[in-house]
Structure formats: structure tokens, C-alpha cells
Length: 91
Image 1 (spheres, rainbow, N blue to C red):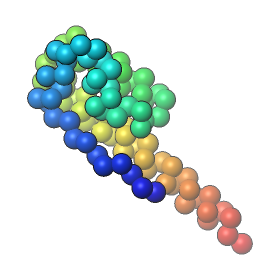
Image 2 (image 1 turned 90 degrees about the vertical axis):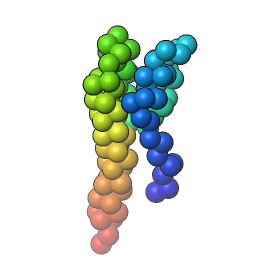
Image 3 (image 1 turned 90 degrees about the horizontal axis):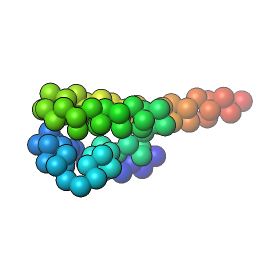
């Protein structure tokens, strides 16, 4: 499975993005929420809203960590399912 190159967003970038127009959408796109599952997508958007309200570096670090875990989890799960399905198809 070919994966897109990972963009790493830093705390400093998040702090700069929060001041821009439409910060929720911009930060969500930077965190690759479209590559997450539906529930993780919603959880991350709520975390982005909390970050925008607090605007501190600790919440930015927590947001980056949880978003990267969710993206990597979503990528790992389909690979495991494909492996399991191919094993079941073998005689």
C-alpha cells in the first residue's frame, strides 16, 4: 500500500495557524484528519477547538501527539485486515 509522505507539523506552526482565518479548518487539514477514521476525525476536531480556546503550547503538544497516533492507527488497521483476509482465502 503506497502511503502519502508524512507532513510533520510543529507546535510553533500550530501556534501560528491558530491566529489565521478559519483556523479550525486549517489546523485540521494540517493534522491530516481526512486520513483518520470518522470517530477519530471528530475527536481531533474537538481537540483542535479546545486548543484554539486555550492557545497554550501544552495543549498543542497533546494535540500533535494524539493526531499522529490516530493517523498511524488508521493506516495500520487496513493493512492488518488485508493480511487476515488474504490468509482466509488460502486453501
